[in-house]
Every structure is written in C-alpha cells, then in structure tokens.
Length: 455
Image 1: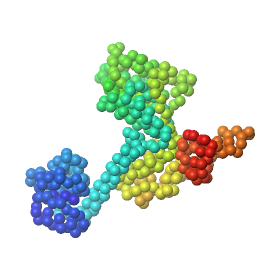
Image 2: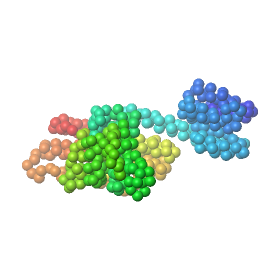
Image 3: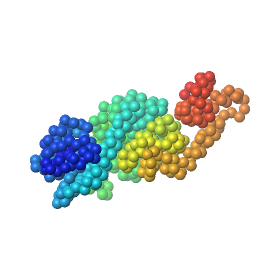
Image 4: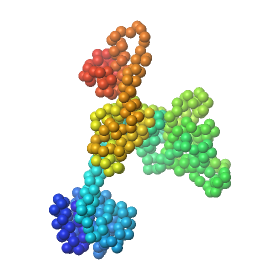
C-alpha cells in the first residue's frame, strides 16, 4: 500500500501500525513524491492519503493518479472540520474517508474492505478477458455450434450494408447481435440507434422514427429529429418490428426503396445513409398470411435472416453463462462467491428457461444476492425453477417418442432414431444426451458411429 502524509511523525506512526498489521507500506511525504512512486510501480493495492497537504492535496493526487491509469482504492484522512470536502471527494470517485484522530480498528476494517474489493475487481477483469478471448463474441457468450455459426455469419455479413432480420424469442439477446453486426461494420464509429416498435403507439412511433416539424401535432412546440436522421451514417435497429402498423410499414418500405423520408408534418424529403437491422419474435410469414405484415417490407429487410436459438436449444452454453453471471453479481453485490454446487448447475441446466438468457440472468442476480455461502446451493434458487427443472428431463423423454412410427420399425431403427432425437433435443450436447439415455459418453459415441448419426 502507499501511505501519503506531509506530517513526518504521523507518517512514522502509521507506517509502524500498518506494518505490524502485515501491510507492506510505501511512504511519501507529499503528493509529488507519491505520484512518482505510483508512476514507477503498478502493483499498489490501496492508497491512504491525507486530504490537506501543501502543494498537491489528496483529492488532486487522486485525479492525477487516475489520469495515469485506473486508480487503486483511494482512502483519504481528514480532520472533522473538512468532512464536507471529504464527502465531495467521494462524489468525485474517492473510495472512502477516515476522520482524524484515526480509530485504528476502523482503519483496519476500511483497508481490508478496500483490498478485498480490489482483488474482486481484478478477478472480474481477468474473467472478462478470459470470456472475451475464449468464449465470447462482442459480449455474446456461447460455445454451442448454433452460436458459433451465428458468430461466423456476423463476421461475414457485418462488413456489408446488407439489411438483416433477426428472429428469436424474448430474452435471447437479439439487440446484442444487432450491436455485434454494427461493430463489425464500416459504420462502427457512428451511432447505432435503437427503437422498440412494441413500446409506442402508432403516432408516437411515427414521430420517434421519422421526426417531426414544429406544429406537426398538438404538443409539437419545436422541430425534432427522428431516429432515422440520428442514425445517419450508422445503423438503425428496429426491435419488435412485427408490432409496427401497416401504415408505418408502408412508410418504412418507401424509405428503404428511395432512401428518403418526410418528417411528420413536412412535405420536404430528407436523405440519410442508414443500415437497417430489425428483430422480431413473430413468425413474419404467418403475419403476412394473416395480412398483418407487408411481404415487400420483409423481402427488403430480410436480405440476411439470423435465427437466434432459445437457451433450451443450446444447453451446453448454460454452465458458461451461469459462471459469468455469478461472478458478475458477486462483485456487484460484494459477495464472496466462487461458483455453484454441481447439484445447482444440474438444475439450471435442466430448466427450460422460457425467458431465455434474460431469465437466467435475473435468476442468478436473485440467488447471488440471497446467498449465504461461497457456492450457490439449490435451495437458493427459486422454488418454481427447482420444481420445473425436475420435470424437464421426463418431458424431453416423452417428446422424443412422439414422432416415432407406431409399427413397421426395427429395434435398430428405433434406437438410432431415439439417439438422433435426443441429440437434437440436447442441441448436440453429447454429455447431456448420454445422461438422458442413461448410458456413458463412450457408449453414446460408439452408437453414433455405428448408426452413422450426424448432427
């Protein structure tokens, strides 16, 4: 740790006390000396500095350190009369403050907490780097074949200006995929502007999307740019496009055809350069048959379709997501948690997650917040998830048999079909399939090879 105090006697006393507590103490008699030490050494875990010092004071020292690199936990010492200044320092990013004369028991608690938070921050940073390098693609976590195929598609399509339609259930991460497409594009330095078609009424959506001139409608006291114009040079993401009215669909189609639009209340056309990405949880072909969606608009936007699998169809990604979210919320809620019990992971892997990744994330946020030990236990999950997970495996087995022919099939054919359907239900996860079938992975691999089953 780095100790900074312009009073030599205080510096000596504190150094002795902290050294007895087991701290390796670096001393500085003023801000300038402290800054030199900080520039020379990168492994300082915590800074304890006096607030009022001649020359560079404690708060100024904090800001100078932050300009060099991310500052470690920074604790200031202040006399009672300058508490107001200390509170202001907290607002500017300082970790904590102690009032002189120091309570050495409080000092020990504050330092221990700061160093613990520093270690957790380092661990989270390490985890993020690991996830980014090994398992993630623009903050989307997945190792399943389906997700890897989507990542490959985004790498291929991203650099183009092709319009993309993303299909997927609620909570599958469609906006994250849209952002990945934007980041992979030549437009990445410009904005990606989002608008949710399901969140606004028809008139509000029209004004938000296309903008309006002054006096266009009641309450339009001044002109306002729409999301289309704000996205000029970048990407427009239309979420839940299936909720858009036919009238607005027609107006959007005209823009896609002509690259121009008119704000609400105006007859003057405006031209923008925008790439359009849309997303929906609807079957748009079915919506077309019902007369709820324009086929021409779909053909314009769906140059490239991307279908995001539900979480239950990529179960092999669940353990990775679980560990990621547990570590994330452990840091956020200041919990000392290093993982989940095997029984807990089994429940989480069996549950069907109708709300997909969003539901998993919320489930783990709650579990971490309420946790009492170093690893998440099954009873720290919601009763609904534990109960539902208990029936998932049995339900999957029933579904496996649902499409088999009633007669005219050999035992070999039945076994082959059973294995194929089990693998399909498990999204190719052979470990999970072997568990459902009650056989070892080795036996499953032998049967896959014998029957020539491919996924």
